[in-house]
Image 1 (tube, helix red, strand yellow):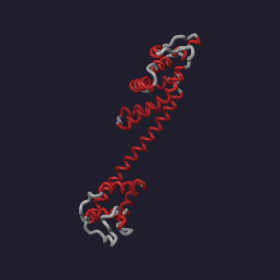
Image 2: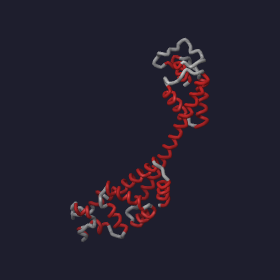
Image 3: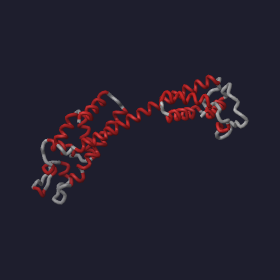
Image 4: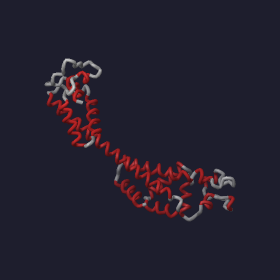
Length: 248
C-alpha cells in the first residue's frame, strides 16, 4: 500500500518525496511496482493502524484505503509531502467512516428483514385459524390491514380479502367457497362464481390454486413494507411495525 501511495505522490509532483530508486518508471502500467519494497510503508502503516483502531475491521480498513486511492488517482496536487500526507490521511478516514455507516445500515437492514420473514412465517402458519386472524387484525392499523388485503387481492385473487373476512365471521371453508358434493352448491365469492367455480370435479380448487399462496405472498408483503420503512424511516412506520411484530 505504501508503494501505491508513493507512486500517486510522485506522479502528482509532491515535493520532498524520498528517492524512488533506479527502477522507478512513471510510464509503467503499474508504476507502484517499480518502486522499492517498503517505499512509504511507514506512512501507509500508520494510516492503516489508525483505521484499525477506529473501526476494528481489517477488511474495511483495506477497502477504505484502496477505494480512496483509486478515487484520487490523477487528482492530487503538487503539495509539500507533509500536506499531501495530511490530505490523504483525512480522505482515507472519511472513506472509512462512509464504509462503516454503509456496513451498519446493511447489517441492520439484513437482520430486520430476517426478523420480519420469521415473524411473517409464524403468523402465516396460523392464518387458517379465524381467532389468530382476528388477533392479527387487532394489532395492525386499519391502513396496514387494508394494504395487506389489497396486496393479497392483487397478487392472489380478488376475493381473497372477502374469504378471510368471512372466515373471521365464522363461516366454514365449504360455506364460503362452495362444495357441491357436500350439499353446498353455491359460493359466496363473487369473482370466483364468475369464473365458473365450484364444480363437482374440483371442490378443493380454491385451496389448491389460491389459498396456498397466502403464506408466501404475505411474507413477500411484509418484507417489502419493512424495506420501505428502512428506506424511508418515519416514527409512524417504525412504531407500527414494532407493535405488529412484537405483539403477535
